Structure formats: C-alpha cells, structure tokens
Amino acid sequence: MSDDLKQGLEGVLVTESELSKIDGDAGKLVYRGYTIEDLATGASFEEVLYLLWHGHLPNAAELDEFTDAMVEERHVDDDVMQTVEQLADADENPMAALRTAVSMLSSHDPDAETDPTDLDANLRKGRRITAKIPTVLAAFARFRDGQDAVEPREDLSHAANFLYMLNGEAPDEVLAETFDMALVLHADHGINASTFSAMVTASTLSDLHSAITSAIGTLKGSLHGGANQDVMEMLKEVDDAQQDPIDWVKTALDEGRRVSGFGHRVYNVKDPRAKILSQRSKELGEAAGSLKWYEMSTAIEDYLKAEKGLAPNVDFYSASTYYQMGIPIDIYTPIFAMSRVGGWTAHVLEQYENNRLIRPRARYVGPTDQTFVPLDER
Ligand SMILES: CC(=O)SCCNC(=O)CCNC(=O)[C@H](O)C(C)(C)COP(=O)(O)OP(=O)(O)OC[C@H]1O[C@@H](n2cnc3c(N)ncnc32)[C@H](O)[C@@H]1OP(=O)(O)O
Ligand SMILES: O=C([O-])CC(=O)C(=O)O
Image (tube, rainbow, N blue to C red; front, side):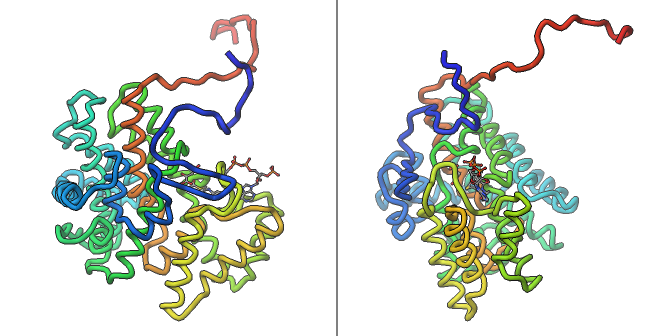
C-alpha cells in the first residue's frame, strides 16, 4: 500500500475504459477510436449515444430502431412534471431541479426493480433518462416564464426537439445542427469528476438513476460543468460595464480569482472541442452581423495564453455559442448534463461489467490518544 498522496487524484489510474481517449499534450480527443472532429461534423448525437453504449457506430437500420426507441421515451409522467413546475415556481436552480427530476424518474421506470447490473435493463433505463432530460429541462425553463410545457415532437431529432420544446417553434437547420454538434462534443470525456461520481455510486451496486443523480450534482459545480454559465456571466458583465475584457481578467487574476472556461486537469493546450466551438461561435456572430462575443472571447484567450499559459476548455466557447442561439444562460449546465448523460451511462455500464467497490483512503492527520471526557464534564 503506497503512502503517496495524490490530491485531487491527479494522474491516478482508476480503471480501464474503451470509451474516450484524451491526449492532453496534443489536444486530441477520440470516442471509441473516432476523432471528435470527425464525429462533430459527421455523426448525430443519436449515433454517438449508440457508439458509446453499443460499442460501434450504428448502420442505418440500427440507428432507425434506436432513434424510434428514444423518441418513444420522450414523454415525462404528469407527477414528475408537476414537481418540475413546483420547482420552477419556487425559482429552484436549474441543475438542482434537473437533479431532483432525474432522481424522481426512477419511480416511474418499469425497470426500477431489476438487478442494478442488468445490461439490457440499464440500456433501457439509459435511453429513458436521456430521452426525458430535454423534456424536463425545456418544461422547467418555460414554467419559470409562466408558459405551458410543449409536448415533444416525434419527427424531430433529439437536438431539434429540445429547441422546439424550449422555444415552442422548430429551430432552423443551422440552430438544430449547431446544437446537435454541441451535444456530440460534450458526450464523454474520460474519468472527469461527474463521471467518476457516477462510477463510485454504481460501484456500490446502486442503480443507474442513483448514479446519474450523483453525476448531475457533481457536474453542477463551477470548477466543472458550471463553468459555462460563469463564462457567459463574465462576458455579459464586461459588456454591460463597457469594460475592456483584459482589464476584467487582470483584476480577477490580481484578486486571486480563476477565469472560468480556462485551464483543465488533462489538457495542457487548447481543448479540441473549444477549437470547434470557437469556430461555430464566430460563424453565428457573422450570421448575426456582430462578432462582439467572439472577439471579446478571443481577446481573453490571447491574453491568458500569453500571460499565464492557460488555454480555453470546452466551457469557454460553448457559452457564446449558446448565447447567440438565444438559450437562457442558467440552463447551459443542464444542457451539458443533457449530453454527458450518454457518457455517464456508458461508464456505469463499464463499471458494472467489471465491478469493484471504489474506496480510496485518507492519510489521518488528526489528533491521536485523546482522553475521553463525558458530556457533563466538558
Ligand atoms: C467541463 C469541465 O469541467 S472543463 C473545466 C471547467 N472549469 C473551469 O473552467 C473553471 C476554471 N478552471 C479551473 O479552476 C482549473 O483549471 C480546473 C479546476 C479546471 C483544473 O484544475 P487543476 O487541474 O486542479 O489545476 P490547478 O487548480 O492545480 O491549477 C494549476 C495552476 O493554474 C492556475 N489556473 C488554472 N486554471 C485557472 C484559471 N481558470 N484561471 C486562473 N488560473 C488558473 C492555478 O491558479 C494554478 O496556478 P498556481 O500553480 O500558480 O497556483
Ligand atoms: O475531463 C474533465 O476533467 C472535465 C470534463 O468533463 C470535460 O472536459 O469535458
């Protein structure tokens, strides 16, 4: 047993996985051997889900069957929707609302009582959770605005249907394609904190709903998925104050604050997903006739690279991309969850396949040999 302390588990190998390979020095990401660039341009989110869960890219017949099975699961039971409405009325944080709703979905899951490690049941549960998250999230966003939920449409893709349920009208091709690409880019990323959370939960032989609920709670934090919302809030703050973005960043650094959307535990160079998203952010700006958000972002990127050697992660350019798509800022992190649920599920399946309880240890540095004093004598 080694007594080396690895704070934050940095660099610690905890499992073998066939899902995603990250080269942090070269800035490369692949899912099951396919580059993120090829998948972003060539595959839909549904194809990527299939790839992650079934081990190969689907052929046309497999994809049709899978898509139909996902579409069938889009509807969310009334009492879950009522809870979502109550949470929206109470102005709950969107990630907290999603965490509660996903946890509650298990009470309606026909496979809830099956063996937690049953592969076929878990594939069905994974499809259900993944199909229902957009319905829950779009309804939550609308309820907050005093609007009714919009029923899912069966003829739209996972990405397009979400935008339809959110806005009450079907998105144009550019928006649907951009959102689908964003879902593809966020679907998996090795043993990141939220995925590890899901694996720890599954390793006790708890169930998939519990694992995904744990993961949502972990993704919520500002050092992880929560950073995409923080990035847009920073850009808005700079813009509202008509400030030079570099001055904002200098002040933040002087005050010892982190700049959201920069730095990464694994990448030492620009995140390959940030490269793709920055291009998309630029294209959306060009189409709208204003490169304001893109240019503000690249100015911050250039400054942090030169001054601190810090590069943007996936959350930096997803922020201005989503903003230019008209998506409310505080649902950026739930949108991340809408995609990452694919990776969480795939890693939980791998965990069950070769399970061992995950249980590290701490070096005890507290007091020893204390003399116990009864309560009435303290
Ligand atoms: C989807 C995702 O989860 S991507 C990550 C999303 N999170 C963010 O964007 C939040 C901002 N980034 C960060 O806080 C960090 O880069 C993390 C949490 C992502 C990675 O953290 P770690 O791997 O633990 O790196 P660590 O915290 O040790 O930072 C290393 C050094 O870089 C600095 N640094 C890292 N990121 C930043 C940042 N965003 N802003 C300013 N300084 C930073 C740290 O201050 C530290 O400097 P020091 O050695 O002089 O103290
Ligand atoms: O891998 C990580 O540490 C963070 C993460 O989830 C990602 O970058 O997508």
